Image (cartoon, rainbow, N blue to C red; front, top):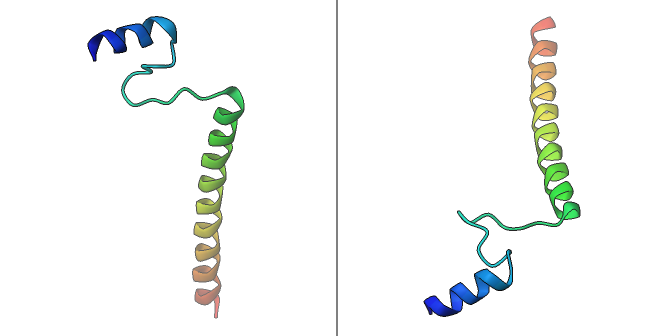
Length: 60
């Protein structure tokens, strides 16, 4: 088993990326970044919606 791992490590750099990190293509990295940004933006939007709702109730 160790010999196989050593052979895979020498033949391809993507065999052992380390610490569970997956090697992503530039496109895949960009998609992951955009998804994270979208998630954060949706969270901010939801917070702002709640804030507007709270402030509009206190005006009445």
